[in-house]
Image (cartoon, rainbow, N blue to C red):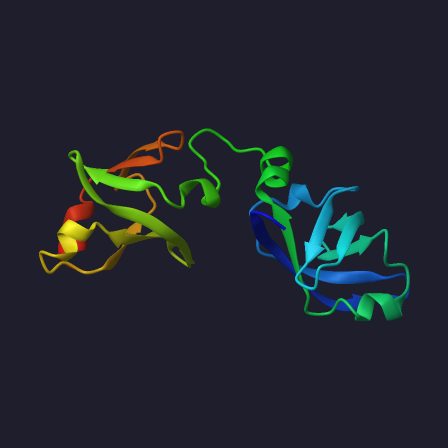
Length: 175
């Protein structure tokens, strides 16, 4: 699957009719609506029949008994970037992580590097930035973490893959 995004892990079967525990790794539970299609890490295509967010269970059209449900234990569910954009609505100043990856980070028109990953820690999200080559040649770290919060992120331009930051160079220099 092109542009696949990991969204959940399937747990043990629940009951006799093929319900399965689901452990979401997504900020968008609304994407698990009836008829939504997901692909497992083993290449199986699954169509959502029912999803109960409060119970943390899901049932698929293709699975209707406990034996079939048990075969899915510990499998991962993936969706595509296109399906994510279609099924998940963002609020103002929210962005999909896959849109932020590969953005260049600038401070006062100086290119500090490119976002290569986003890490979720208990106190917040952090951009992992691969430092611009010219700065690495000045003995600065090859990568650094920048908090994804208003104190550091001034502007995000997804179209041009450009993020304006403040105080990011100080973080880089002290990393």
